[in-house]
Image 1 (cartoon, rainbow, N blue to C red):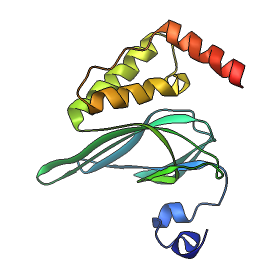
Image 2 (cartoon, rainbow, N blue to C red):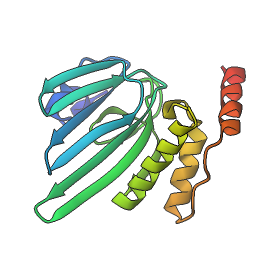
Image 3 (cartoon, rainbow, N blue to C red):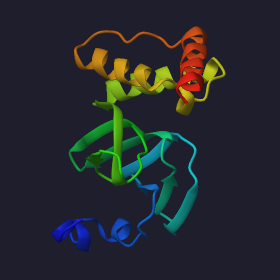
Amino acid sequence: MTGIAASGARRGPLLAALPVDNLTHVELMWVEKRQENWIRFGNQTHEQILDRRRRIVSFRPGAVFALVRWAASEFGTIISRIDIVRAVTRSEAYQTLPFVRPGGEILLKIESWPKVERVLQMIDAIERLGIDPHAVSPDHWRQIHNRMTVGQEPRTYTLGQHRASLLRRRVEG
């Protein structure tokens, strides 16, 4: 890295102070009626509590997690968003997104509360099948993103799809 990125000058003060490692760090925040960042699912490997409103959770490369962000002003909601992200190694290409360092492979990005709520309902349905959402095929999250982006109803995830995804991972792995 060179220039500003190497010095950390463009990063937030909290995430810039983190050690350079192979983990993906996510800053979570809760300020009542103002801002909420939370993890809906994902197996974190480390947690650092900064104060009663802020913490940083970390994920190993390959881990999939869902980050939900909501913020409001005195005039109402200004952002509702869910990102489903795969943590990457430092040698992989990645996309940047707020509160996530260095970034990750964004499998799904949905904005506006009605759509975010729909994705949360789909996650609940996957859990009712007895499947951990972090183990779902990345292709499923991509198809939800693609179909919702064009206004179509996403396909539901099935046990058969999940078994096929696990077999494919075993064969590729």
